[in-house]
Image (tube, rainbow, N blue to C red; front, side, top):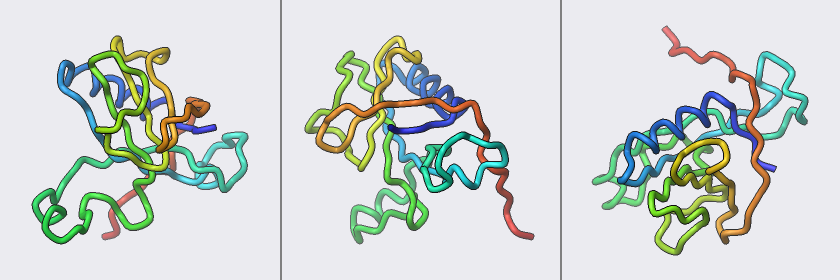
Length: 137
């Protein structure tokens, strides 16, 4: 079962709708359920998708193979939109351990989770907010 916060899922679906008919392709990061301030009802070690990371550093990444846009240890998931309506993983998709795919009309019923081989996985949206983060002074 893949867990995602309701807020993140809402933002991802809105972003896909705004970019349609273009595709959306974002890295996702997780927070351990035990790090949430409220009780999620999950095992504390369970990863919950909470953030997306915009793609940055494309030219450096292409030359040196270093992904500057993803913090170390994060980014084991991706969000993709398929404006053509294919609710699955295709050979041309950027893959990760977990791939969330959304299709029009970009609502809760038109998004699904898959592993990198394209096998479907359960997807659950949690009404919980991740812990607040701040930049050290």
